[in-house]
Amino acid sequence: MHRSQQCHQRYHDKISTATSSSNQQYGDTIGSMITAPIRAIEFFSGIGAFSSACKRFNVEIIAAYDQGQDANRVYELNSGLAPSSRNLDTIGAAEIPDADIWWLSPPCTPYTVRGLQHDDDDNRALSLKNLIQLLSDKLPPVVFVENVIAFERSRMFSHLTEHLRKLDYKVTLEKLCPTDFGVPMKRPRIFITATREPFTVNRSQLNIEIQPMSLAAFVNSSNTGPRLPDAVLSKHGEGMHIVKPTQEGAYAICFTSGYAKTFRASGSFIEEELGVRRFSPDEILSLLGFPSEFQFPIDMDMEARWRLVGNSVDVRSICRLIHSVEANGKWVELLPE
Ligand SMILES: C[S@@+](CC[C@H](N)C(=O)[O-])C[C@H]1O[C@@H](n2cnc3c(N)ncnc32)[C@H](O)[C@@H]1O
Image (tube, rainbow, N blue to C red; front, side, top):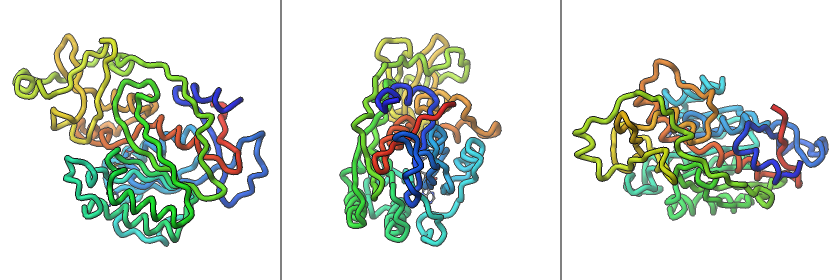
């Protein structure tokens, strides 16, 4: 099957692909596909958007790292792998296994207006600084970094990309948003893909046929959960983004980790016959492209769930990134389910 023919299916259906380890022979491929699994490490793993995308490919996560206990419980429940809670500010090269892919989605607060934009002077940027230094020792042939759009204007971005280029990585950037895949949610993000030989990036055949989806398709119309009290609506209503999912062109704005507590610029609210309510964590997961079988531990409270999904990443965007990586012209394979 031609790669472009797979794309439409790729972002909407269950898919599986495979590429090979950098130090393996690339001869044993089927047609133009690479079939050996590649090994990946997910740093700042959260609930595992990268892990969720990798399940559709023949990419094996060999280690994940996150300091958040709630995040690690969700990650383990869904992937079977328990992330290490080692602080990435100080982790050393010897503690990290060799891998073909590094996935990094570090905290975005050092680069946002809300986070006061202390950039590389922010303590929350120490972990990324440390991992950038460790790249010289570990040299994973593929490095993905995800962050908010403002990251591109930061000193940290310059430091990261200059360091990667010094280490002979080819660095490419792509800005992606769920709306690029027809999903009615605005969550633009910048993705860096850095590759060393034999890995390269080829997006030429990744044209996506977009079929705009309705917000109603992501909303559970039988949700009878709590509605916002009138007092909240009269105090904050004007600054809130309230949507009727069945209205043509309705879309959700970016959900943040503060959604459970804040009413403005932290995500959209749904207006229904019963009143105005928050999007449930499951509805947000669905907008982010997580599979329907994704679960939270049953004893995890709603606030923790909202915090975790607000920190996560669009799974379809990650699938596109993985699928853009080639080695010696061989590309990832669509496996039968
Ligand atoms: C933007 S979120 C990433 C979310 C993740 N990509 C997902 O799919 O849910 C950043 C994550 O980094 C973790 N984190 C922040 N600083 C860390 C550090 N110094 N060491 C380890 N984990 C850290 C946080 O707990 C948080 O889960």
